[in-house]
Image (tube, rainbow, N blue to C red; front, top):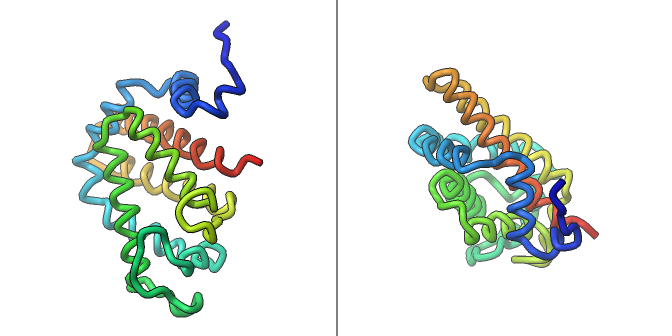
Length: 190
């Protein structure tokens, strides 16, 4: 039986990530599968980003979080929710961030720098980083992650890849998105 220093899981990001990857069986082969999927997924990133934002705009509980100034955005912000449209510059700014995030998942080396980035993705949706007035409820983050996971799976399953490659890709991306989800959820702990 391997000993895990449970308090350290809460204080040492690298240790936490190592434990999670080992426990889930997220291996170098999974990373190679994800990187190998870049050619398949990269051309689909704009459509995936559009689908995510079409889902977000369809609920006031998710869309309202885009009214406050987003960290790093210097342009005009809407005065109220009804003024926030898909073509608003702040939404275009956010869509670019999501596209870069998705591209990074399939191209970046899985090292300490990427782990810190994935952790920051969780933190930025809380008052702990970026704009202190942005606090996306965990239920909305979980809903979004579920939607993204389904969209990625649908993309893979709808591809022309052989069945065994589809299976490997779905499993690899599922583990990756669970890792990301943990690095989101940890910033909501009391």
